Length: 288
Image: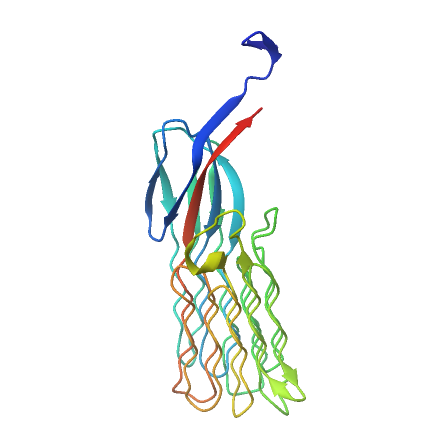
């Protein structure tokens, strides 16, 4: 049944007077809203995925969701900031990043941690990347990049990782996916690791935020020998490594960037993913 609203028949407006105040949370806690706030715009960035040894694929960037959420004024709104997945040594599966979320009046809104890069291995056995907010890159023995936006949300929270090259003649791995673009496939001629997918620039909505407002880039794919490794994606993705026992670069802290794959050999370690961040903008607007 229609309601009256100051003499106007229809749905009651819920006006938010948040003054467009921006708060960045780099660790789990609360965002305390102003008395007039009723709606917030939130960038939820999960932790990036880690990578592994033996020219592993790059870790996927953490999921990134930029959405509007209803809240109450003068309230401590709970926020969880996910950690990055740990990079690993020989024979160990790279770890996924942890989820980030915010608890609104309607639901808990979650971004998924980035998937780990495809596990390195000396034999010609394909090792695929792991799915997540953005997917990890496939290892350079014919491994395929994993799906991003897993579980699916709209708009998508991330992209797929790139494919690794076939086992011979070179061993080069794919880049992890980023929130703004898929990870690049590795190449064979000339042989090179795939670059991590680009992160997403949210600075138009959240001006003045850390890391120039670009988040959740993918990690670069590692390579076995002298072939160049993949660069990390913009938005905190770590670079891959090349050559015996070289370590992959970690994703940048509080960007959700994926870790870079290690070089060849049994002594290198993949880069860890970067931790996430949650950015809250208290809106000035009327809904209804």
